[in-house]
Length: 346
Image (cartoon, rainbow, N blue to C red; front, top):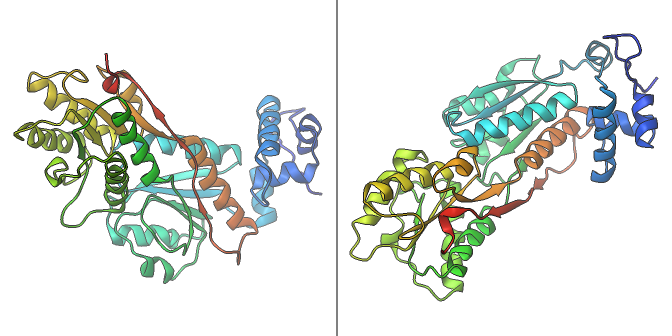
């Protein structure tokens, strides 16, 4: 029998009930629930709406007995204090739960050894698959893992598709952020987020988008306008902004490579007796919740966190269940520019 039956209460919804409500086959519903085959986005949405409406929950014990799977995934980020990762984790957990999976979380602090252990599933046979956002691992280390557990990568670094990889187009997103400032009439645009001497992929890609936008508009690229930072938190943004405020000619706008640095920069501008955006406009990246509630509210690039999470979980479950041997894929969910008060000309 293809379907799974829930046993938590009398009259609980079954796969066949979901299939009837969605107008699809029981097999299609099973594929959506278990991630065992690719299903068109429109069909997947219709099935998910039926699942939510009927309150369907898979029988996890039956699944484990039938498949030998534990129903446990692991999610690991390098900087859990960063609200972007916390918000993305909420989306991953919600997506996994809809498929009847539990998510264990860990913070690697960007340590290569911790990341490699996580990429191997910690050697724990109870872990079915891993979603990992690494900072310190390289392509060779990933390719030579001693335990080839299903693994999906997040983040900007290029790993040569040794695993499935989910990330937005950071170069295009950064370019769009800076073009927005140019379109608003700003001409001396700084950037906060460059790292020296060992820039991470995030810094490289977002600086590339920044410089491309300036050159496309015929504006000069001045190294003094993108002072290096150590990390991507509020104090780093504030420190970099203070360096920009010491320049003989101040920038009239600044693109920050994440929202936390933008919020730190906003504080430094305020402490200098200047105003955002009247004196210096700001744009961030990530659209964390705090961006909407800062004063002024922060213009930012909003990656589609829901789509990133759904792509990561769906791809991982496909690999777990039947995707062995297929070429690894790069999936790039969308993003949008959210224009708020920090960059608007009055």
